[in-house]
Image (tube, rainbow over all chains, first blue to last red; front, side, top):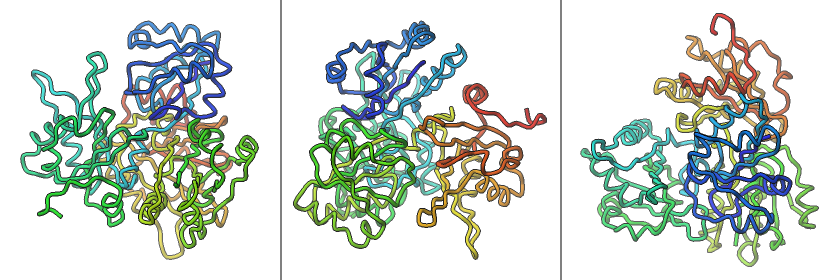
Length: 255
Length: 255
């Protein structure tokens, strides 16, 4: 049997159910490549008195020995956030089922619902998009088109920021805003909400004009993870929430 | 201090972090009205050796004594799913902050990410909508318009089903499909995915033509909770997943 187990957004966000299950499983692996996470699992190894073996991209996609083990024994694959948000993991479930291996997902918290920490109503979000790092011959644009389409329907857009683990690169809000500004020639985007280190002790919600936020250096936002939201027109309750709970950087003429 | 604590989608999906916190808190309340849940909290009361006091809608919105307590002592409000998905809970955070009460959210699993159990890719979902029960002078329609707008952008739509707790009514997929059929005069909707009792031991994923699924009685789907997805055009990987992991009810001429 193969268990895909969500670790959530920060330390000890694994569910009690999953934790109890792990006490009974000997083959515990950690997916180290799909999602960002910044919490170590020493506390977990110590509580369980078991080793958690890291798996690389190759271990998971090219040479999945853990699937062979799962034919005979229980195997747990630990994943940051909620497991199936990464399509790699729906693919693992599919491959396992085709080999006759039973599978089960143990869910945990995810940015897809936790983004409501911004006070923006979750049912007002349109399609989510990701901002990739520009490359030599490619300047990303599709996330911008998604944002504008959502805006036209008066929907918020959650923008996930690129992570290049192998290079230890985590896109910072400063870099994301620079990319946005380059694409937003007609000034369609006025406001931005940044949420930094969601669900961590030092979580910050930052709300302001793109022009104002663009003035800050990388360091202002602190370490990753960060997520951006380009809000639609704010409901009264959403605006009140941001004005009460966020750090505000509004230009006086836009107030 | 006020803690909003997510209970997740099924028993023991509360995070380990939240569970540990509850061992140190004496004022523990349960929001009994906003979301659906079908798991009792006896296990929690027994593990903690503490009482969890249920709060009604009135206790939360009209006469929130728990907020007065939170001015002086730690208070935990338990909520199904991930707390801020219900706008009532962002409103509670706002009201608490205005009273000078510090707040913190402890996240858990939510249908917003767990819906990926259908194999449909989470980044291909558009705006979510809810199907309300029709009333004497009101036949709901806006969720249908959202579905069609999403479809036009080739996006999936998650449809949440109405819950009327005070009347013990939980909309069944049969009722939802009957409402959909009444609105879908031009046969825009072909396929439906139903997920029943997500994250529970007896979870089911049902995939079929709306015409075929409409033939089943309520009982076919079993007890709540249920969620519907109206899929956009399926990616190859999404279709393969559904054909492998779902129960299929396709009319031979649509195969």
